[in-house]
Image (cartoon, rainbow, N blue to C red; front, side, top):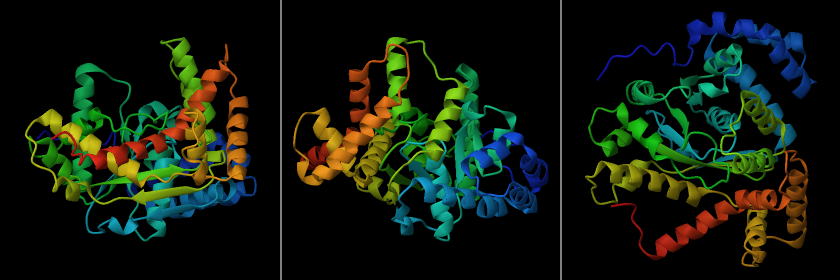
Length: 393
């Protein structure tokens, strides 16, 4: 196994606080965000609080959790955790989740971990989100490590090997937990399927030539994140049309910043994090798989199954399904008042979309697709259970 210097990708540690965190208190961009989103916070007091932080844990508990709690009080109807007792405190785990929100998926995970007396996890974050140098400092001092998204070819393979080695070091050797999304980028249509390349990358840094053994070493726990409402849904729908109309269209860093801000400040309703059990216990029930590609497929499909099964379905999910497929299959799962509320919400989000050649029929269908896919995934699980399904053996 190659020896790596992880200084360019690792999370910042306590020794980095004076140089990397304290100067952020004077950043006008950060002050502007606080002033706009949290006008009740005294800027001078917050600057003093940031400079009083001596450790990464200080920063997370005094500043990050404070702001996230304030945000949740304004734009959610509560955040809860189920199954958190499945975490073994003596070990590191890889928490793999579906990916809805650029910032909040991992941020709220750490809030829940901290409030339940657990160590917070390290966070994998793509460097494509570093719209400015100070953003990298901010996230790395908040236990984030860097995933390179701006390279291809041989460089990408080398970076993936290094990243995987870092993940294995942190989880296996140091007993630190890590959060990673099941795929690169958010699942825009909420189909929530694990990307094979992510699993292959995770295997690269293991000690075995066997994918399954390397994934087992990470003691992976899939965590299903269920948002009642996605404030970025209209932005995602717009992206679908822009890509449909121009295959060369790509998001800009400004688009990412807008998505981050909208996800943080927009109304999300109820939120639940459901911690499933370790993958290893599920793998023990399967016959052994020798083929490496079949192993990767098995890991992907098992994660998908566990996440889809643990996902919470809200009235808007059932309403969207019945509207999209022109059925009344799930009419018992919502009241007329809930249907009216859901349709009004979706129409309100549709009205926010401002793009050239706006295709309202297509955009409406994409919004329905986003909210109905979690129901579709549950239906697929039922069909597979009826056929004694075993993933890719």
